[in-house]
Image (cartoon, rainbow, N blue to C red):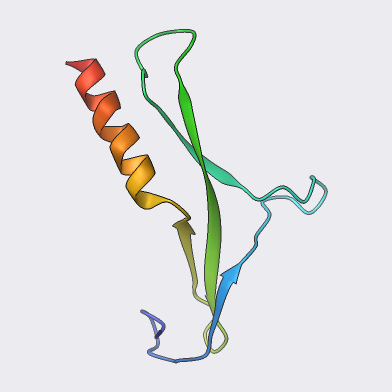
Length: 82
């Protein structure tokens, strides 16, 4: 694994991150709605996130744990908007 900015191989993998140190230790998540056009019962899909950090330049890359699952929900949401 190499840093996309500086090319260093000093990558710290799968770091848990928090958006606010005063909040709980819950891992931040991304959310996509299967039915985005309705006001209730949108059927949200939550995906945990993690980060890889370059130990040389400090670049942080954010990833979701289940990209295929969130992509499938995205496709369903787009179909529901048609």
